[in-house]
Length: 405
Ligand SMILES: Cc1cc2nc3c(=O)[nH]c(=O)nc-3n(C[C@H](O)[C@H](O)[C@H](O)COP(=O)(O)OP(=O)(O)OC[C@H]3O[C@@H](n4cnc5c(N)ncnc54)[C@H](O)[C@@H]3O)c2cc1C
Image (tube, rainbow, N blue to C red; front, side):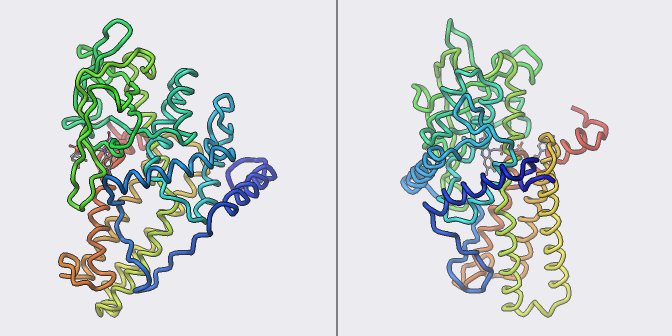
């Protein structure tokens, strides 16, 4: 019989589980389940963490400190190769560890999410052993933070259209261009940058991936103020940034392959905690309907029941997908279900709260939904927009005819 982490040796996974629980219990308080009781505690309905400046730096320092503890105890890079200090375990152990950690008050690990979930795995998969040691291991040791320099003003969904150029000069490359929507760039130490190295090649073949030190001369990071208040996005201007050829990840012209591998990692990282968060939201929606006199309305109840079913289905779907080793395209289903459900939850809240959704009346559990719905719109875009993921599923999974390009 297969273990909880999809690994045949159940006794091994059980020992792992006990060891992880011992490590966690010795360091962190247990997390109280966040019940959907009306009016209890903070509303906590913002989907995006809205921080800036000093607050963001402090969160990053706390996340790095926890990552160092994980590393010291052998939980810092569970799927990483033994030769590079990882634990060499199958992906199921990563999932199992996350589930165990979710029972405890862990610092917010969001500042490290891109480094550990996207940039690190991409360097480990496509870099040389020296590059893994030099650029990726520090991320897992909790010594460095990475950001992802992919999107540009005219290249988001059409990522292969990036215009940032790198020109070879002897043993170096000189990079010039602009990136945008870069999360975490204000405190990142290194960025994984997709750039064009051959303007004459077909667009997917003229790209190369580089690691760019964020403190290199010519890198300028400008925070972007969001509609919802924070400045967690940035524009990154690269002007004659010189990096040695040792910073190139993969062969020249192979950048697209590295980028798609990295993005598949991003979609695989769709969190388990969302289910708990959505379950709480559903309870709060019920409380809202009761307080606004809508719980007796059969149409409102029908909508609530429809959401309940959708959230259950999303959970079962994710559990099923985690049991099988599939590529990135299939994982797009999880992300699509998540972003659609977040939006539907926010839309029902808007309908139930009425004017208190747009004007803050100070009532608990009303205006806070505004932040939820705004955040849900961001999730529809991040990590590939819904339209792009549907096209990907249609073409690569269902085998439908390709869109004209
Ligand atoms: C929360 C968040 C975090 C992010 N973090 C990062 C980061 O750290 N690093 C980074 O590089 N980027 C990041 N991004 C940027 C993100 O990857 C892009 O926003 C995304 O790829 C979409 O690109 P775009 O914004 O240019 O929109 P566009 O590509 O201009 O799309 C606009 C609209 O047109 C639709 N569309 C476009 N092409 C097609 C098509 N062929 N068929 C059908 N519809 C189409 C899209 O679905 C969308 O609705 C982040 C975005 C968000 C929201």
